[in-house]
Image 1 (cartoon, rainbow, N blue to C red):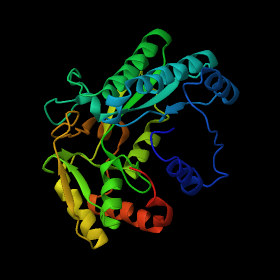
Image 2 (image 1 turned 90 degrees about the horizontal axis):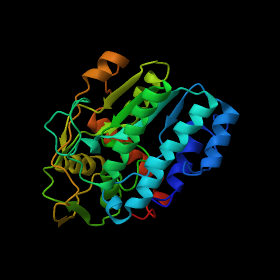
Image 3 (image 1 turned 45 degrees about the vertical axis):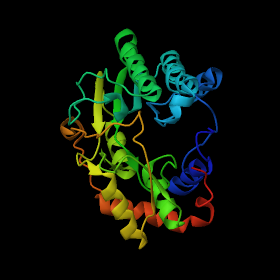
Length: 289
């Protein structure tokens, strides 16, 4: 992927699991032949599609690549699963599909106020999953993730960017006045939620994975300043047209179906992101944002 520096992905594979814990193949879900071969060769009990072209703002500049990956790529996986007899499929979707809905966001809310090609591409992927449940009796779980952050987080997301800018004494570029609120969810909590759902046979279900605690961007900046012992130099920019004022997950369904509850506080989560950056600063500081 050229969406961001692939060294981040390589670090995750090599350090979070260890090189011998999984069989890692460097490929692209838009490669239909590769996807078919792998699913037929391994015949897994379940497929979890975490592969996506992510990023709301970048999707404005190149919507085609978002549809190629998020829609066609998901279709390739579903077709390969159908042909291989794999009927358990889990999809990582996004809180972006809620757009400007009333809050908190419930899974059954209408999703017709989308604000970016990224959001519409993920909604289309959800629609494909729903169709394959109807036509081919798949068991589908769609997760809607809310602002995932943590160690080795995506460099296009606010937490990594803010940590890098403050740590390196660079101006922190802030769109809007910072009163926007996001439902920041630590990657450890998200991973637990996904794992908890793997063995379910739900028919079709959509589940929010969020913290249920929206936080102002200004408060996140203050947490990072505290963790680093440095003060941000803020460079203010206009509110971006793809941004929403706030996100807020209702997580009662995750609690009920998965017995899931977010466990990582914002303070601890920011601390983990800052610690990771400082431990990997020698190369992480050179990642382009």
